[in-house]
View 1 (tube, rainbow, N blue to C red):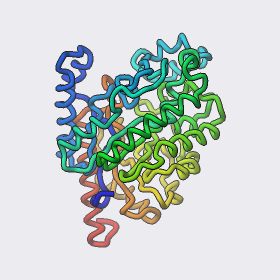
View 2: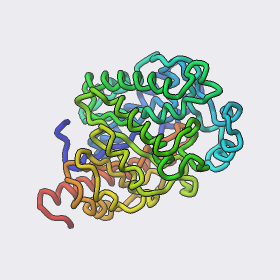
View 3: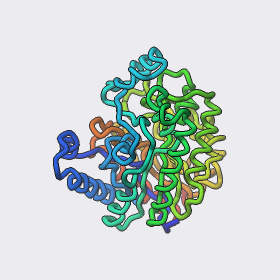
Length: 388
């Protein structure tokens, strides 16, 4: 692991895309790749200027955090929720889900397995190489987790001719992700983060819930406990034999709306038994939102894992106060060593390319606050004090 400063500041993944990139994504001009490069360079600079220690490319090449794989994996087809309505088995339940979400059904796109999955291009390796070439800071690469992909991509009426069961799809998903992680590790990536947002739907809502993380609940057939067991197994299979980078899992509660009523709530107590069993070095958890429940759940935080502590809310325009953020970090210090605490937003700032929940100005302001918080916490460590 690199020699990072105490309380390193990072992002969960995405930053809002510039308007000129969004326009290019709609028109698909011949120079689209150059514009994506320019947007990634801008995202890197924005993070560096804000004081971020571990940077990403802002996911500027992606339309969202997982559907971008359709451009890089044969056998995946991008479909909107409205299109999927014709193919799901329980149409009435799915219609209820669409009504509960605070976004139009045509605005959310889901990768669906309609053929044998084979990598057409690197999933993130080229993105990493570009990022590594243009920053001297530590870098993070994000990828959708295996459980998320297996659960969202397997739609029986569309997938079963190629993958009769979800477990058969899972074998190929694990293979593709494991190969990508090993190549990223060999190339020198500092942090690799797997995004597993659907775990919160399992723990806090249950199989029959109407509020879920977007549409990634289509193939749940077992009990929440069995699904969580499957998620642990899939993550551990993906990371097996991957040495070098800090391997992380991010658990989200939904980040597509400012309306808390359509997002998931609940303490991490319900998930911690399964998160403990994941063979990763860090858990990236949300604590800026009150929906996360009390922070004292961290009293029993796993001693073998670093914590990506969500401190600022990517869904709100207000910039948080440094003193308050310091108090929240100090509250967990009796339980977690300073060396294991990273500071980050709760989630990405641009979940959907064309529907970010925050402006770039708000995002940069919140990242600057995180950097100022880290500086103050480091000062206190040097002086051996816990308050200013």
